[in-house]
Image 1 (cartoon, rainbow, N blue to C red):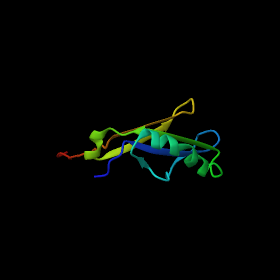
Image 2: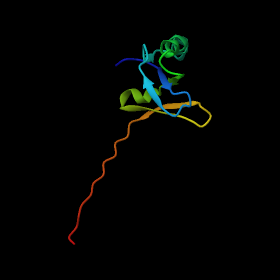
Image 3: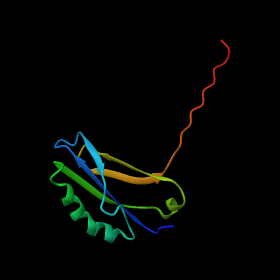
Image 4: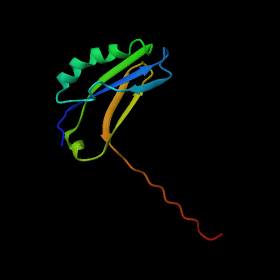
Amino acid sequence: MEHFTALLLIVGCSDNLAVCTELPAPAPVYESAAECEQALPPAMREYMSDFPQILAKCLSVDPALKEQDAELVWEINGQGDLIASVEPATEYSIAARRTGD
């Protein structure tokens, strides 16, 4: 299994941050947070001509998540900050049964 500890998230947004989309990172995972932080500025520059606002963040990955499915969860808060985390994937199944009328 691949060993990594940091994930690079890049998000391109409209001027007012109302519309944002996750963008592909040149290398989405890194062996260390320092490597990820070093890659962050050039990765952001790559998209500057395509989006008025570019937000990016290096996220620590919990080693326990390497053995299970995980999902990247992010949002832009009211102050314009990128808030993100890598969390265990959750599956919700809803069962419904109709009983006699």
